[in-house]
Image (cartoon, one colour):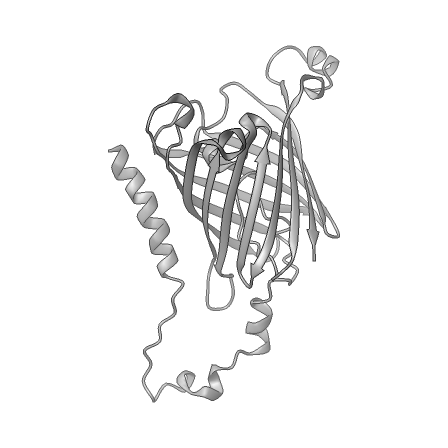
Length: 290
């Protein structure tokens, strides 16, 4: 049963990728097949502009999950994730206030930088201080939501390893599928398959999960964001990861005040889930360079 669920996630991801190849067989009577009509209209070119402002997609992440937001060629983005170690569901309000809501109890941090290698293609490197985990990934934006595509689709490949990428390697394959509604709401479905997700335990296990996320505009450039990452099968300890945040965009900067049940951020860590009966305070800070 577990292998069937994992196979379903993998097959679904590949099936979505295959849909990125447009149909080429057209009869000579089809006006769209003529060279004159093959030229993109200004509207189509604007939809395919990776640098175009997408008002309801201010960031390359929901909170921890990826989005379909494209990065222009040779542009960059820096992303900092910070989760304090104090569990807000333990102790009284006075206890949490005395620890400044977890700030006094240390933190898990992740630094990420992504670079636009070419149009629609990104290279991403990230490091977290938890187990000195390093993750390398690549993201290909197959297409954006437009008049001919009801959703946006990005394909993602990654591999991570502990102790500065020296052990416990966990490759992953997945996709981000998005749908926006009148620049007011964006929803995401991110199916992933992670190999060797239980490496730290010495057990050979894999995990399939589908991350679900949503972003809604509160006022101009301010958003409420939520995500949850239910696992479909394989290695599924603890609870599914969840998080919610209030997010603010100011020019090329995006700041998010985050609450969630996990301090983790890589795909392998998301596959292992969040802590039961836990809620941690944190923030995300991003800066675009384009």
